Length: 361
Image (cartoon, rainbow, N blue to C red; front, side, top):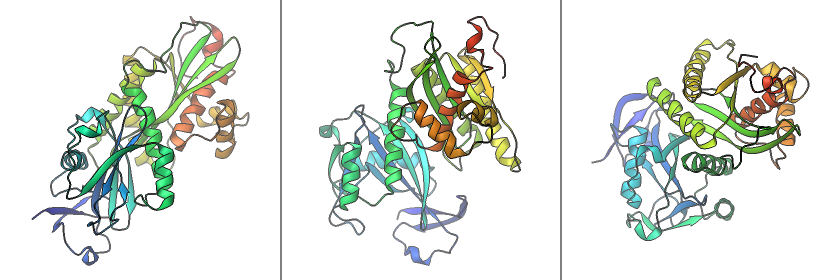
């Protein structure tokens, strides 16, 4: 009999286990279960969807993300998602192709979502036919249309968009020959990587700044995520490894990162400090110059007013980067603001020549 662990509302295991086919309505009000979802993307940015069998109790004959199900007793979230990929579609992938994105609370369950990268052909898939009737690749527009038509499991639209956004950015990181790499050497152009530090979510934003023309070219933005309720040491390793891959792929000249400050939540501040530390380590290991800015400096540089509201900053980021929409999630937009701050700041060392000494601004 398959058993599953019971968690509390904080995401910690309670020590209780129940059969997978239990009547979940009998759970205590604070009890939660863990479900994992794997969203497989190919290099063209399409998501692999599976069609649920018409015999399924929930969402019969509906399309769903690539693979998913309950985490079994004793499994970590990551172990569960790798097992579901093997069982449902016959996919065996190393850890470096599987990236945690977010945790979404739905009624009595926590749903962990992972972005997975593979150019597997449909003929290579080994579908679990008692669960899955077929599989196919779809673009984001097609997936959203299916959601609106009611033929896809009713995930939040913003979640679908976020998964595609993360997949696009992470695919860039995985490419050895990134399309964002500089095609020509231009002494007047500086590639700036803005970083919004954190422990659960780290935002990054990449721009090219032409000092001669005083112009900006938006390249990419996105996030690095780490799974909740995993050891701090593992989360820090994930941040370091992903930052290293990001730097290798995008080849920035300088780093612009938010300066750490403590508000009333000291515990959160300490966690962010841990994450920020390994980010700085990865950047220094890559021999990159690092510049630090306070939130007030970012607002002053991007908007022209140090007490600007969040929306004003986001609107200016959208305008300066010539984007149709404000970047999402907010962590990515904040990172772009940091990159723009370094380019626009009147005190920026960008204007003092190539031999200027790196320092904290």
